[in-house]
Length: 193
Image (cartoon, rainbow, N blue to C red; front, side):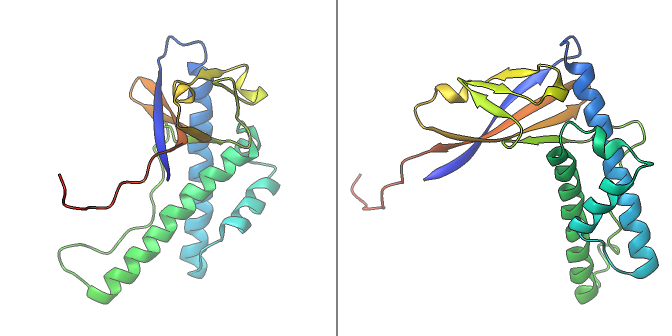
């Protein structure tokens, strides 16, 4: 059986790559807020949601707004849009549930909010852009030679690498490496122990 696991690495402000990663997390927040602005206005004006594919086309073609193209890769920008799409789908599910019950304990669900102006957002790089070579993750050129040495590759049951998520925290960035391992199936219960 194949299961997913996460290996965490802490990137402190003293790290030479911290400022660059922090900047990309800031661009991720800008992209999230810009896409959310477009979605909110389309929803309030037409009562329709803009699909992920349409949003991707709109932001790619937007010459006045450079944050989409400034992201490390097109896939990382698309991951931000997918995250926003997931938040909007959750909002629509909440509205459906609320209209059926109209529960007084919980109020009407609100539209997905903007991230704080000076805040940061999650940055995701997938295995399409990040390569695993001899236990070291090699990142795209825009990340200026940034590498991570993984401990999970030394495990006997290591299966594959999926993605890296950079989570901005208070005073540091957490790099979460998502990977798969193979584990043995549990034996069926036989009541003999």
